[in-house]
Amino acid sequence: MEKEEHEEWAKEEEDNEKKWRERKQKWKSEKEQENESKVQEIVEEKYKNWKEDRLDGPGHCSMLPASSDTPVLSFFCRSNEHTQMEICTSSTCVKAAANLMLTIDSTKDPCSNFYEYACGGWNQHFTIPDDMSRYGTFADVRVKVRRQMKGECFSSTRRNMRYELYN
Image (cartoon, rainbow, N blue to C red):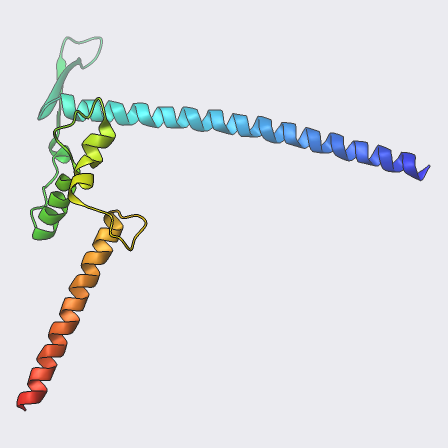
């Protein structure tokens, strides 16, 4: 009797687990569909906003009838001033832009090989150091910061040594 009860219990557990997995899969697919539709809506909205902001020119005016009873037209104007961004011209921004421009290989066509266009300059201007297995922008910045810190440490030590020698 115990064996039969155990087998029955195991079968119930297996059935419950199967139902749970099916519910979970159904819920997951519903969530995925919901997320996909939300993403699609967001993309469409962003594209619509981008299209309106970019293609309408410096400003956009529309003529609409004020009401169906009167032949008066209303003018609605919108300015695109909010879409114009200020360009950073500080030395830090210029250096960052120059570093980005180094990575671009403008001889390549971005439509045929985007990777070569975007990263081809990096391969031409930078080499992986012997003591590193990989080297990227973060590693490059880290090396430059360390060099700068070492330079400052050594120069401040020399200044202190000169001060102590002459006083």
